[in-house]
Image 1 (tube, rainbow, N blue to C red):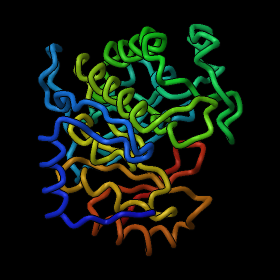
Image 2: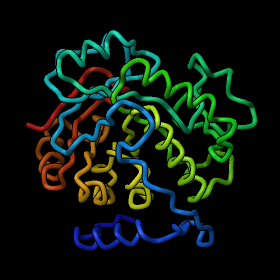
Image 3: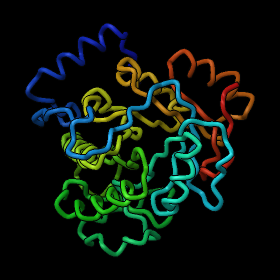
Length: 289
Protein backbone atom coordinates (compact mmCIF):
# COMPACT_ATOMS: atom_id res chain seq x y z
CA UNK A 1 0.00 0.00 0.00
CA UNK A 2 1.37 3.41 -0.91
CA UNK A 3 2.06 5.95 1.76
CA UNK A 4 2.29 9.72 1.31
CA UNK A 5 3.27 11.47 4.50
CA UNK A 6 3.22 15.28 4.59
CA UNK A 7 6.60 16.88 5.12
CA UNK A 8 5.78 18.13 8.61
CA UNK A 9 4.78 14.68 9.68
CA UNK A 10 7.95 13.28 8.15
CA UNK A 11 10.02 15.65 10.26
CA UNK A 12 8.25 14.52 13.41
CA UNK A 13 8.62 10.87 12.49
CA UNK A 14 12.30 11.22 11.72
CA UNK A 15 12.89 12.99 14.99
CA UNK A 16 11.23 10.15 16.84
CA UNK A 17 13.23 7.57 14.89
CA UNK A 18 16.50 9.24 15.73
CA UNK A 19 15.80 9.43 19.46
CA UNK A 20 14.07 6.11 19.98
CA UNK A 21 16.30 3.28 21.28
CA UNK A 22 14.59 0.64 19.13
CA UNK A 23 13.09 0.15 15.71
CA UNK A 24 10.15 -2.23 15.60
CA UNK A 25 9.95 -4.89 12.94
CA UNK A 26 6.53 -3.90 11.65
CA UNK A 27 6.44 -6.77 9.17
CA UNK A 28 6.95 -9.43 11.82
CA UNK A 29 5.22 -7.46 14.56
CA UNK A 30 7.53 -8.73 17.29
CA UNK A 31 11.22 -8.17 16.54
CA UNK A 32 13.15 -5.03 17.48
CA UNK A 33 16.59 -3.92 16.36
CA UNK A 34 18.73 -1.53 18.42
CA UNK A 35 19.18 1.79 16.59
CA UNK A 36 22.87 2.22 15.83
CA UNK A 37 24.67 5.53 15.46
CA UNK A 38 23.95 6.92 11.98
CA UNK A 39 26.94 6.69 9.69
CA UNK A 40 25.67 8.62 6.68
CA UNK A 41 27.64 11.70 7.68
CA UNK A 42 31.31 11.62 6.60
CA UNK A 43 32.58 10.49 9.99
CA UNK A 44 34.33 7.31 8.91
CA UNK A 45 38.00 6.49 9.27
CA UNK A 46 38.58 6.96 5.54
CA UNK A 47 40.50 10.04 4.47
CA UNK A 48 38.15 10.50 1.51
CA UNK A 49 35.33 13.00 1.74
CA UNK A 50 32.03 11.22 1.28
CA UNK A 51 30.03 12.51 -1.68
CA UNK A 52 26.50 13.55 -0.73
CA UNK A 53 24.47 14.06 -3.93
CA UNK A 54 21.56 16.49 -4.04
CA UNK A 55 18.24 16.19 -5.84
CA UNK A 56 19.14 18.48 -8.75
CA UNK A 57 21.71 16.14 -10.30
CA UNK A 58 21.26 14.53 -13.72
CA UNK A 59 22.39 10.95 -14.33
CA UNK A 60 23.00 8.05 -16.65
CA UNK A 61 22.75 4.35 -15.77
CA UNK A 62 24.52 1.93 -18.08
CA UNK A 63 25.34 -1.64 -17.08
CA UNK A 64 25.38 -3.27 -20.52
CA UNK A 65 28.86 -3.01 -22.03
CA UNK A 66 30.73 -2.28 -24.21
CA UNK A 67 31.10 0.55 -24.88
CA UNK A 68 30.11 3.09 -22.25
CA UNK A 69 28.76 6.26 -23.84
CA UNK A 70 30.76 8.96 -22.05
CA UNK A 71 29.50 11.79 -24.24
CA UNK A 72 26.37 12.58 -22.23
CA UNK A 73 26.12 15.92 -20.46
CA UNK A 74 25.13 14.49 -17.07
CA UNK A 75 26.40 14.92 -13.53
CA UNK A 76 26.51 11.25 -12.53
CA UNK A 77 27.26 7.91 -14.19
CA UNK A 78 26.18 4.62 -12.59
CA UNK A 79 28.37 1.77 -13.92
CA UNK A 80 29.10 -1.89 -13.17
CA UNK A 81 31.93 -2.62 -10.72
CA UNK A 82 33.45 -5.51 -12.63
CA UNK A 83 33.00 -4.09 -16.15
CA UNK A 84 34.46 -0.66 -15.37
CA UNK A 85 38.18 0.01 -14.99
CA UNK A 86 39.89 2.76 -13.04
CA UNK A 87 40.87 4.54 -16.25
CA UNK A 88 37.24 5.08 -17.24
CA UNK A 89 36.36 6.37 -13.77
CA UNK A 90 39.31 8.76 -13.91
CA UNK A 91 38.29 9.94 -17.39
CA UNK A 92 34.75 10.69 -16.21
CA UNK A 93 36.13 12.54 -13.19
CA UNK A 94 38.22 14.64 -15.55
CA UNK A 95 34.97 15.64 -17.26
CA UNK A 96 33.53 16.72 -13.91
CA UNK A 97 31.32 13.65 -13.49
CA UNK A 98 30.68 11.61 -10.37
CA UNK A 99 30.64 7.81 -10.77
CA UNK A 100 28.58 5.23 -8.88
CA UNK A 101 29.69 1.61 -8.51
CA UNK A 102 26.93 -0.93 -9.20
CA UNK A 103 27.15 -4.32 -7.49
CA UNK A 104 24.68 -6.91 -6.30
CA UNK A 105 24.83 -7.30 -2.53
CA UNK A 106 21.80 -9.52 -1.99
CA UNK A 107 22.07 -11.97 -4.86
CA UNK A 108 24.58 -14.43 -6.31
CA UNK A 109 25.35 -14.11 -10.04
CA UNK A 110 27.01 -17.08 -11.70
CA UNK A 111 28.92 -14.94 -14.23
CA UNK A 112 30.84 -12.83 -11.73
CA UNK A 113 34.58 -13.50 -11.26
CA UNK A 114 34.13 -14.12 -7.52
CA UNK A 115 31.06 -16.38 -7.86
CA UNK A 116 32.96 -19.45 -6.61
CA UNK A 117 33.79 -17.71 -3.32
CA UNK A 118 30.19 -17.85 -2.05
CA UNK A 119 29.58 -20.82 0.30
CA UNK A 120 26.77 -23.07 -1.00
CA UNK A 121 24.74 -22.64 2.21
CA UNK A 122 24.23 -18.90 1.58
CA UNK A 123 22.86 -19.37 -1.96
CA UNK A 124 19.08 -19.65 -2.13
CA UNK A 125 16.33 -19.83 -4.71
CA UNK A 126 16.41 -18.51 -8.24
CA UNK A 127 15.85 -14.82 -8.71
CA UNK A 128 12.80 -15.12 -10.94
CA UNK A 129 13.26 -13.42 -14.29
CA UNK A 130 17.06 -13.24 -14.14
CA UNK A 131 18.89 -16.31 -15.45
CA UNK A 132 21.95 -17.36 -13.47
CA UNK A 133 21.01 -15.28 -10.43
CA UNK A 134 19.97 -16.54 -6.99
CA UNK A 135 19.09 -14.89 -3.69
CA UNK A 136 21.54 -14.81 -0.78
CA UNK A 137 21.00 -15.50 2.91
CA UNK A 138 21.80 -12.02 4.16
CA UNK A 139 21.48 -13.20 7.78
CA UNK A 140 24.90 -14.86 7.41
CA UNK A 141 26.86 -11.62 7.29
CA UNK A 142 29.98 -13.31 8.64
CA UNK A 143 30.15 -15.54 5.55
CA UNK A 144 29.23 -12.81 3.07
CA UNK A 145 31.43 -10.12 4.62
CA UNK A 146 34.80 -11.13 3.07
CA UNK A 147 33.30 -11.20 -0.43
CA UNK A 148 31.34 -7.98 -0.14
CA UNK A 149 34.20 -6.17 1.55
CA UNK A 150 36.44 -7.18 -1.33
CA UNK A 151 33.91 -5.78 -3.79
CA UNK A 152 33.70 -2.50 -1.88
CA UNK A 153 37.50 -2.38 -1.75
CA UNK A 154 37.52 -2.65 -5.55
CA UNK A 155 34.97 0.18 -5.82
CA UNK A 156 37.18 2.42 -3.72
CA UNK A 157 40.40 1.38 -5.45
CA UNK A 158 38.95 2.20 -8.86
CA UNK A 159 38.02 5.66 -7.62
CA UNK A 160 34.23 5.39 -7.58
CA UNK A 161 32.42 8.04 -5.54
CA UNK A 162 29.51 5.91 -4.35
CA UNK A 163 28.04 2.43 -4.41
CA UNK A 164 24.65 1.15 -5.55
CA UNK A 165 24.06 -2.17 -3.77
CA UNK A 166 21.34 -4.07 -5.61
CA UNK A 167 18.83 -6.57 -4.22
CA UNK A 168 18.84 -5.28 -0.65
CA UNK A 169 15.10 -5.87 -0.20
CA UNK A 170 15.05 -9.68 -0.26
CA UNK A 171 13.05 -9.92 2.98
CA UNK A 172 9.95 -9.44 0.83
CA UNK A 173 10.89 -12.01 -1.81
CA UNK A 174 10.80 -15.80 -2.14
CA UNK A 175 14.48 -16.25 -1.33
CA UNK A 176 14.36 -19.70 0.23
CA UNK A 177 15.30 -18.22 3.60
CA UNK A 178 13.01 -16.91 6.39
CA UNK A 179 14.35 -13.36 6.14
CA UNK A 180 12.67 -10.75 8.32
CA UNK A 181 12.36 -6.99 8.25
CA UNK A 182 14.90 -6.87 11.08
CA UNK A 183 17.35 -9.11 9.18
CA UNK A 184 17.21 -6.74 6.23
CA UNK A 185 17.74 -3.67 8.41
CA UNK A 186 20.80 -5.23 10.04
CA UNK A 187 22.33 -6.23 6.70
CA UNK A 188 21.64 -2.88 5.02
CA UNK A 189 23.08 -0.94 7.95
CA UNK A 190 26.17 -3.13 7.87
CA UNK A 191 26.59 -2.39 4.17
CA UNK A 192 26.26 1.34 4.77
CA UNK A 193 28.90 1.24 7.49
CA UNK A 194 31.30 -0.72 5.27
CA UNK A 195 30.80 1.72 2.38
CA UNK A 196 31.38 4.77 4.56
CA UNK A 197 34.50 3.22 6.08
CA UNK A 198 35.93 3.24 2.55
CA UNK A 199 34.87 6.82 1.84
CA UNK A 200 32.03 5.74 -0.46
CA UNK A 201 28.55 7.18 -0.36
CA UNK A 202 25.80 4.59 -0.55
CA UNK A 203 22.33 4.58 -2.09
CA UNK A 204 19.21 2.81 -0.88
CA UNK A 205 18.19 0.68 -3.87
CA UNK A 206 14.39 0.30 -3.89
CA UNK A 207 13.51 -1.11 -0.39
CA UNK A 208 11.01 1.71 0.04
CA UNK A 209 9.34 -0.02 2.99
CA UNK A 210 12.44 0.67 5.08
CA UNK A 211 13.14 4.18 3.80
CA UNK A 212 12.30 5.89 7.09
CA UNK A 213 14.37 3.53 9.22
CA UNK A 214 17.35 3.60 6.86
CA UNK A 215 17.37 7.32 6.11
CA UNK A 216 20.10 8.09 8.69
CA UNK A 217 22.39 5.45 7.18
CA UNK A 218 22.03 6.02 3.41
CA UNK A 219 23.11 9.12 1.49
CA UNK A 220 20.76 8.92 -1.51
CA UNK A 221 18.31 6.49 -3.08
CA UNK A 222 17.65 4.82 -6.43
CA UNK A 223 14.26 3.52 -7.50
CA UNK A 224 13.01 1.37 -10.36
CA UNK A 225 9.44 1.48 -11.66
CA UNK A 226 8.19 3.60 -8.79
CA UNK A 227 5.98 5.64 -11.14
CA UNK A 228 4.73 2.57 -13.03
CA UNK A 229 4.00 0.80 -9.72
CA UNK A 230 2.82 3.95 -7.94
CA UNK A 231 5.06 4.01 -4.88
CA UNK A 232 7.33 7.02 -5.47
CA UNK A 233 5.77 8.86 -2.54
CA UNK A 234 7.30 6.26 -0.22
CA UNK A 235 10.65 7.95 -0.83
CA UNK A 236 9.37 11.12 0.84
CA UNK A 237 11.78 10.74 3.79
CA UNK A 238 14.76 11.08 1.45
CA UNK A 239 13.18 13.90 -0.52
CA UNK A 240 12.30 15.82 2.66
CA UNK A 241 15.87 15.39 3.93
CA UNK A 242 17.29 16.90 0.72
CA UNK A 243 18.89 13.62 -0.37
CA UNK A 244 18.93 12.75 -4.05
CA UNK A 245 16.47 10.17 -5.35
CA UNK A 246 17.49 8.83 -8.76
CA UNK A 247 14.51 7.20 -10.49
CA UNK A 248 14.55 4.84 -13.46
CA UNK A 249 11.45 3.95 -15.47
CA UNK A 250 11.44 1.47 -18.35
CA UNK A 251 10.34 1.34 -21.96
CA UNK A 252 8.30 -1.83 -21.37
CA UNK A 253 6.02 0.30 -19.15
CA UNK A 254 6.05 3.72 -20.84
CA UNK A 255 6.37 5.10 -24.34
CA UNK A 256 8.61 8.12 -24.71
CA UNK A 257 5.55 10.35 -25.09
CA UNK A 258 3.92 8.92 -21.96
CA UNK A 259 7.14 9.35 -20.05
CA UNK A 260 7.54 12.99 -21.06
CA UNK A 261 3.89 13.91 -20.59
CA UNK A 262 2.98 11.89 -17.49
CA UNK A 263 6.10 10.86 -15.57
CA UNK A 264 8.25 13.96 -15.94
CA UNK A 265 5.73 16.43 -14.44
CA UNK A 266 5.20 14.14 -11.44
CA UNK A 267 8.95 13.72 -10.98
CA UNK A 268 9.37 17.48 -11.06
CA UNK A 269 6.72 17.94 -8.39
CA UNK A 270 8.26 15.27 -6.15
CA UNK A 271 11.88 16.30 -6.68
CA UNK A 272 13.09 13.04 -8.25
CA UNK A 273 15.71 12.87 -11.00
CA UNK A 274 14.04 10.49 -13.44
CA UNK A 275 15.18 8.87 -16.70
CA UNK A 276 13.60 6.37 -19.09
CA UNK A 277 15.74 3.32 -19.88
CA UNK A 278 15.58 0.02 -21.72
CA UNK A 279 15.26 -2.82 -19.21
CA UNK A 280 18.72 -4.19 -20.11
CA UNK A 281 20.28 -0.84 -19.14
CA UNK A 282 22.19 -0.24 -22.35
CA UNK A 283 23.41 3.22 -23.37
CA UNK A 284 19.99 4.48 -24.55
CA UNK A 285 18.46 7.07 -22.27
CA UNK A 286 15.55 9.51 -22.36
CA UNK A 287 15.59 12.41 -19.92
CA UNK A 288 12.87 14.91 -19.15
CA UNK A 289 12.93 18.03 -21.33
